Image (tube, rainbow, N blue to C red):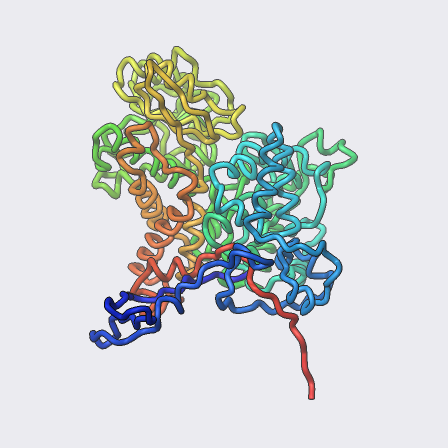
Length: 620
């Protein structure tokens, strides 16, 4: 439900021999270093019940949650609702006996029922609708399914399916989730945030809907992105669902189809620009931080002309980061480091690479910035590192001949010569060792381009990172075929395994979900005031080091999605250690620091049903 759970650890026990049929006392190592008598194993090792309404459930003590709701209100509150899992005593205690079918079903049976319904559907959007219906009615069961079946569920709740869900958001809208702020709310946001029912928000994901995945301006329909991201924060990062809040800043839309759609739920006016736009964003930031001073704010899917400016404005004074710039950069760095390992090279060889980045928007430049910083971290000068990059937009290679039209961040990577050189020209002249795609132009990487690259590089690193799948610069099948199985591949959206000349390759997903949940968990547990670039760097290293040699041999540069909770824990620990090193961990005590692994594990939300009691005000 709403609680982070702690596993009970019983210490070290052993059974004494030669005691006949009697219960033998067991012993454990005491805090003073001596062995002392402990309680019998039979007492501490109680397992789940095997019959009756408690079958499959534990009767061990779980601290109850006090709920202000009562009766049927609880059945309509997704944070407290257990569907048919309420026990008879609980139905009496909470005053809704008779409002549910009489036979209780435990969470495992409920999960099996939902999975059976999802797996019976062929349509991904229908699968999405089914699981989000559970999300709307029972958050505990929803997150239990995600935790236990992340590899199966991630493509359903997030990329690539979330793109279609956003396009159809207005037609699929069923119940309120998240908050919306607009220019109409100017002057009221400080009070509006108190309309949110939860008092302890740790993470906000906010978008203005201007650049949703590779789909462009979806306006208010972009709410599907914060909802999906926060589902991953809860399931993968262990942030409890009552501690997250999805937000859309509705500043209008320039999408003509939405401006003329009678079912569109957002403001049907052109997008705000200039000062009015930034005033809306700033008032929201101040209002959110006034109510929740320690909240982490994640900027998501803002257009390239706004994303970097907002990050530059707030990064040094607000606990925030931009997932498209910094999260994508950190995740890509982890994949690149894994790719170097697969080639038998050390991380320090990053500065020896020739990197072609197709796409000079916020994501492409963000990745370039993170890779450049990593090269400097490994001992290269900034000038040496900059010479490794070839960044191209729709006009070709960025160069100083059009410096006036580039942003300061783009200008950093502008070369002195060959301005406007095409991708093919760059490949044939400069012979890059890796190509990263962030253009949202499906099929941009042609067969000739990839084959030319493979001619001069034995094991090229090919990362088409655009989402959803239809926007990927090439597919896994194409990349492996055109390089005769020699490439190292990762993509923004998932692809099926590929078989080349009898060998099977398992393409992995270079998805920010491997980084942002752990970063969020780490900075909120530490009580950090900002998210530093160094925190993102150590997060990338923790992710890269998680990949095993066996996985690299199968063509994987990212771990299995089913391990994502453990990955997030490792990332969080790395972030906390960096926060400690730089004096940004005021929320941690010496006891917490003694065993960070145990501390982080204990703080991670685990979706299980716990007892509910009605909150009562007693006056005498």
